[in-house]
Image (tube, rainbow, N blue to C red; front, side, top):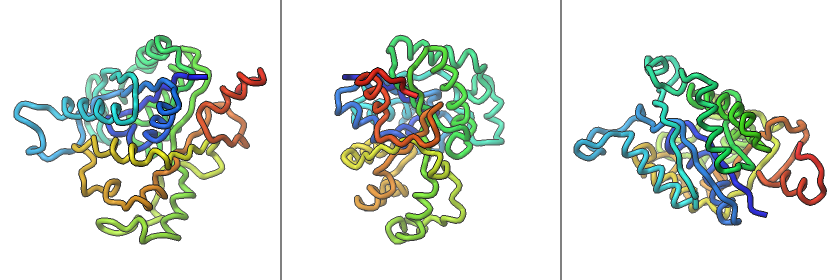
Length: 274
């Protein structure tokens, strides 16, 4: 049975890093995939000569998002219209129109309208700390959960990172991740959540070529010499061949391999999806 998946992200390129494999797999399996981005990433960093004459970074990043979405098989792309809030503690956090400063009810209503239009079955947001604490990512969690409730979306998944898996990978296979300035330091790696918090692990190794291509489409933020694109194929599969989620409201012992598993199970046996 085909379902509709809506993925909600803070900035252009976030979708390519966090959920691109899941999106590509869902589209390949015949599901409808919708991408909603809160901001146009106005405050990203880019070399001045990268942009064309009179071109803004926001314009470039919107175009990059549409190219990445095409690579992944996304059926619809929408921007909520908020302004990139910048990194934590910067003046942009408090600028008029910033996503971090947005009224929660108003922002959730904007997203809920899209969820209702799409009759979304599954919504992805971020975990409570926004994976790594960026203000806009934390706001994606807050806004997304409320929007899902408003729209009555059956399942909400929090995209995250398995911190323990990646720390082990850094310790046990450091040369696989050593590009540029060298391998990351596992003792300083504080992104995502411990393994036991994760309910759903999606194997996306069949779609890592698309995932890498989606990242490359965001050339203003992910250049060819970036950590992401410099990894050899086998190391890329190790680091990015799984995508991790926490199903909102699920039992702590829940273990799934698809965002649609609970829906399929409920459809087959009439049991609740919780």
